[in-house]
Length: 411
Image (cartoon, rainbow, N blue to C red; front, side, top):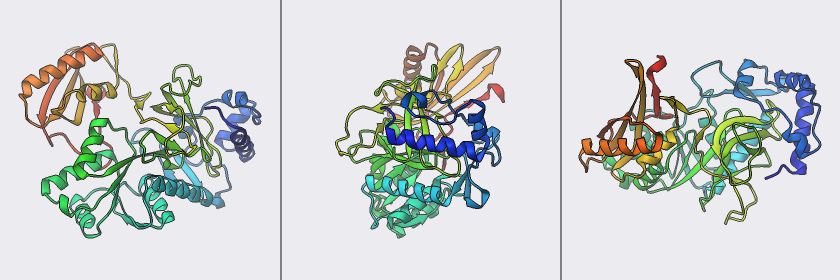
């Protein structure tokens, strides 16, 4: 999927604005001798921007407009390193709301729905993004935020919420609580809009079945507005990305070169009309692919596949590169196992050890099941982990993002 003339024109305008603003990013472009672009080739020759660049600009070095035009700041949800702070103008907030409204519409959500919003509010872009789009749509927002599951379920029943907005981890927690309390007949949910973390097919099916709802994947990140820059439609053939606001590339993470449509690689995003903190060729580290061809829904917005992982979530154990997705794929081959797992890596007596905890429904012998899983993991990644099969509900549930990998070697 090549950049079109309109997008080239908008990126050229952004470059000139950045240089004129003399912000942190504009200064970097000047140092590179970049003054603008005229072609797709010019665009592909532009340098990438990375999260460390944004951290180096802390606190307000990314601001590309006069301070009087900044109406809000948001910060990424990461817990380590210098925070990334993104300034927003009134137009940025409005554009983000329009994109989010479009997400709801693509999911078949209307102003007659009651939208139960559980992601966090504050510096994080999640909760307020879901609410902004909801209000643009004209639907009733129920701005719960995370936590207090008792109150969440009470409000969900009393207000007859029809749409759940959540991380996949919290959606699963709520589904399990609803089943445990036997209140499924009092819940009126029809759809779920789920985002902020990668989730496997097994987890998706559990949430879908236990809540009895249609699920929609929403995509976004704080650096590029927040959640709401793309969503899948009713045909569920990938997430449509709003390329009138954001241009998407897929690159080979090793070479930095664009890959062909259909090939997996790292998502790189450029903001086309953002004012407060425009970003060009920002490496997200999210792994996906552009789905070639047209969607059955008939719209022309490009589609990306599910987020398969991150180019930076690799774990090196015993000289072997391991990705959490590989473990999920092994777990998916055992119907008796649930979607929930946890990897703990330790360094004991001079060697690395990987312990894998997995939940099961209890229909099989735990010891025998652990042995089978260990054998299958070994055939997939090359060494045998210590596998512990536990009962359903033993592993911690999260109101935000689940911590799947705990590396104790550096603690």
